[in-house]
Amino acid sequence: MPQLVPTLIVGAVILLAFLGMFLGYRGRQRRQAQFGRPLPVPTELSPALHERELFYVATTLRDQPLERVAVAGLGMRSRARLTVHSEGAVLELRGVEPLYIPVASVQTIDRSTMAIDRVVERDGLVRIGWLLERTPVDTYLRAGTPPETEATVEALHPLLGCGTSAGGATHD
Image (tube, rainbow, N blue to C red; front, side, top):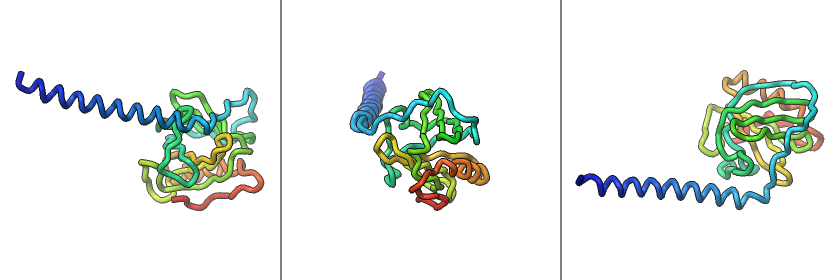
């Protein structure tokens, strides 16, 4: 019985910490509501040019790799499936509606070494720079081995339209 009071105090502190994290994340979602939502996947797409199971790391504001975007399920890491079509890319995150990145929104395709709390070997992440409605964002994906990362970057390159940077460079 003498350990009951300290146990209750520790439990209350842990609950307050989780409540603070929940309220902070919900506040981030509310502040970012003006960013818009990803487009739904069109009902008809051309055959897939490339498909890969990979790991979704994060979506951040462009050139701010520590500022996570939390709208529409983009705030949580998860397993994912990337499908590249001539019209754009489809990213299926577990537990979230699939999102569509149309060719017109894609601005850069390259590699990176870090995003938020994930640091990997040099050029170990695939980075897709695109527009979430009018907000420039970077989506980071972990394809696995260096050859898988390179194959994913190469498969995404046809999505680059006129006036975009070709990528291939490292973005740290």
